[in-house]
Structures are given as C-alpha cells and as structure tokens.
Image (cartoon, rainbow, N blue to C red; front, side, top):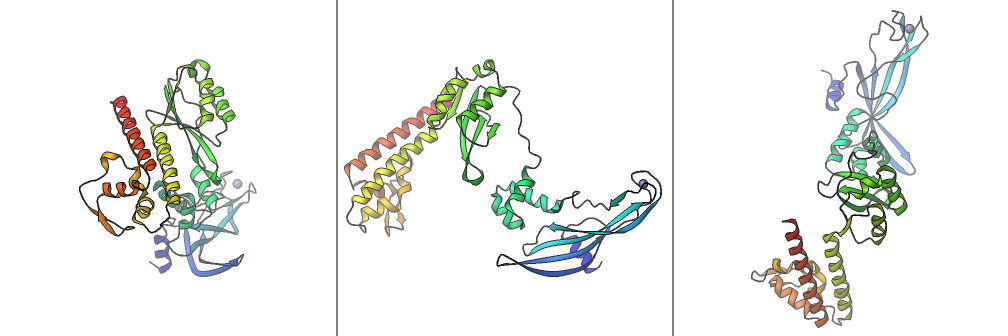
Length: 344
Ligand SMILES: [Zn+2]
C-alpha cells in the first residue's frame, strides 16, 4: 500500500475509484488572517460502458472537472480534497455525465465524513460555534447540516392535558418559545419568537376549541404575558407557576438585599463583608442542607469554620438581612414540602 493510500484510509475515504497522487500545503491570506490548508489531489474515474440514459454502449471519456471538497480535519489544518472527476459523453444521445462517488452528495462540497463528524459532536451537546471551530467550517454550515432535514410537525394527533410553556435564547440572542407535554416532556412545538399573537395563532390554527377545552393545566414561569392569552386559548386550564421560577425569584430578592447591605458596610476588608460577598451561594442553600458540625476552609476568609458559622457571620451585618434570610428559607422549605406532597 502506498503512502497516499494510507492517507486515504486515515481520512476514511472508502472509494476504490479514487486515486491519490499528491499532497501539498497551501497558505492563503483572507482579510489579514493566514489560513493553512492541506490539499490532497486525487482523480475519480472508472470504466462506464453503457449510457445510463439510453442504454447504448456508446460512451466515451470526455475530460475531467475539478471539484473542491472539504474533509474532516485530524486536529490540525483544514484538509481539502481537490478531486478531478471523470466526465463521460454518450455519442448516441449526446448527454454528458460526471463520475459519482459515495463520499459526497451530488453538488455538495462538504463530504459525508465531515457531516457525520458534525453529528457526533452535536450529540455531545456542544454549541454550534464550538463544532464549527473543531471541524473547521462556518457556524451556518453546521446549522445547515444539522437542521437540513428537520421538519416541525404540523400538529399533534392529540393535545396533551398538561402543557408546559417556556422560552429560551436561541439564534442571535433572540428568544424562542417552546411548548412541551408537562408529564412526558415530549416536544409539542418550538416557535421562532415569543410574541403572544404568534403563539395564539399557532394553537388556534391547529387545534379546535373543543380540543383546547380539554387542556387541564399549563405550567409557566412568571411571565405575565402568557397568563393573559392562556385563559383565552385554554379556557378550562389552570395556570401553574413553575416552582423553580419562584425559588429563583426568592433567591434574587434576597441577593438584592445582600448587595445593598454590602454597599452599606464601611470596612470592605472585614470578615463580615467577605463572608457575605464571596460565599453567596451558601445563602441560597436549603436550611436543612447547611452543615453545622463539620468545619471547612473558606478561601475568601482564610479561616476554618462550619457553613452555619459563615452564614451567621454574614447575617450579623444587619437584622433586616437576617430576617429576610429566615423568611426566604422558610418559604422555600414550605414550597418544597408542598411540591413533594402533590407529586406523591
Ligand atoms: Zn446515451
């Protein structure tokens, strides 16, 4: 086996009709940035006797065309395959053909190997931009590969009784709307924006009022906009506020007070200041999970103490803060025990 054939095996080019004849380094400068490529020159040719169009054995070879293909990288520079494809001409029906290879789809420049590399990386939940950097193609190409055949279902056969609405940041930092089955967490739909009128139109155009009347509950976060149209769309549904959002809200309110207290402290090097500022996560912890027996080293303070000691030290900054902490932890405990009862 020649050296070039070994390269082909390394790059998983499994087409015996491709013959490699040269590898060279290429360097281009685009808007001030230097790009390095490895270019593999190869030829694709095979014997074709009968015309696929008319069936007569009247084919002759008719020159080659050059196609530039992208291969997967081996953690180094981008690898291009300059493939000279054989062309054929039929003397009886006057049609011309190009030689075909399974490594790439017709009229595509990204090889199947590269596309499967993108899918493998996407399965590890890597962001599109990271995949693009690893594979060495643009982010929009990665998106095209991933979502090329993706079609959103027009509607579900049966609308679930319990829905869950949320939003998430998608492309270009815009928000998208997502609807799930609240019990199975199966996807109902993703909409490109979270505008009330588009969400209403989506459900009204696809599900009859009779179907929508059967929806018993909709779980949402504290977005007021949703509450207004949920009553209109699903008249019999109860609106359930997601408990995680409530806990988040309580923690945020406590943090606001904590930051105000920090600003009021004159000595920015005091132990109280450091306890409140550096170890803020401890103040969000459930009261029963706070350790009050084992001492540990707190880096910001450079001291050994228990978690409970640290919380007490921080809360000694102001009675108002201490009271807020007690109310917040009690509230969170109550909420969690309610949720446990309702799910039991
Ligand atoms: Zn023909």
